[in-house]
Image (cartoon, rainbow, N blue to C red):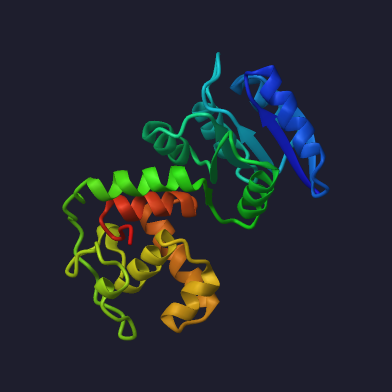
Length: 238
């Protein structure tokens, strides 16, 4: 059973989500809150696996609450569930540490899938939200990188073959070409197994590259990695 807390300032929406999630056999709703401050108290008491978080709330909004929860309770994942899919909310929520982002027209299957996905350590973005994110990132020219690329790994093909938007001669934060390739494939939505098959390496090697690039770029999760990849021109929509 995955323990879930629902956070929404509208009582009707909050109670409806609790009832909806209560019908799912793999989810146990252990609490509900109407603002970010109440959510923090509930998380401290219940230590849930996942928090379904609204963004626009009084006293403490969902972005601030998400950041505090992820900082104090890193084992608790946050899935944002909101009416709004504007770019500012997407970036703020992802930067705060949210692992999933759904709009409120999501059905029970969508929510259950998002909860299961973040519990596996992956990110789940609503298609509308992902499209906005990709459009925004691809429309912004990548900033010039200032860190030279370390010598390329002998087994790595050219980065441009996997990340069309990446520079051939330099990568940010000292990433190697292979780490850049892995990052580009994460941005394409591939799992570790799919990345391993694409690059003809083992899943263990993929995990090593991910750990290294996360450490170099100061990333916490795959959602931040997607934002980072597009911000630095290392991937783009197909």
